[in-house]
Length: 163
Image (tube, rainbow, N blue to C red; front, side, top):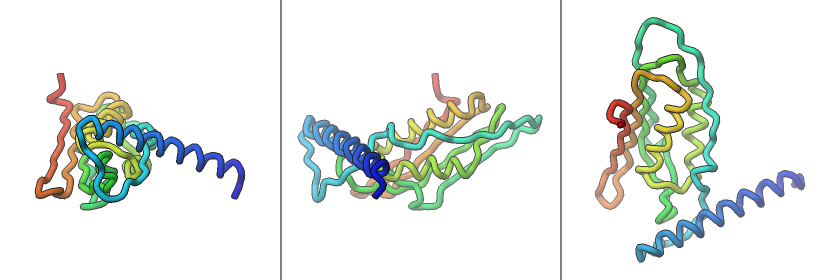
């Protein structure tokens, strides 16, 4: 293998090991031990940061909605190391910008190896998108996760409800 590529792989493994250890220490504070296998995952900072945008200079106020297909959005539970599958929906009325779809897809896919709670991922996606859109009339990000232990989790962040 290319030495530079090998170096990058080793650096990523070291980051994943450090984050996994930190998650295990965090869990231990609450008396939680992982059941089954312990798997490596990456910290939220490892997500893709690039979300391209396109100027929107129309007087028309349209509502833009993106929704992943069921099971297409996932992240890793930092407590169990198991994947959390769900649907992610984004709705906004553009101000000066719209999101470029291909880069949005890659951004969302980047969460597949991230260890993060369901609530935290929703807030993080909201914050990232709001920063890229800059001035939407409103922005809503909602996640609905597959049931786990008989409980379905729905998390919603709406810019109109923020202080």
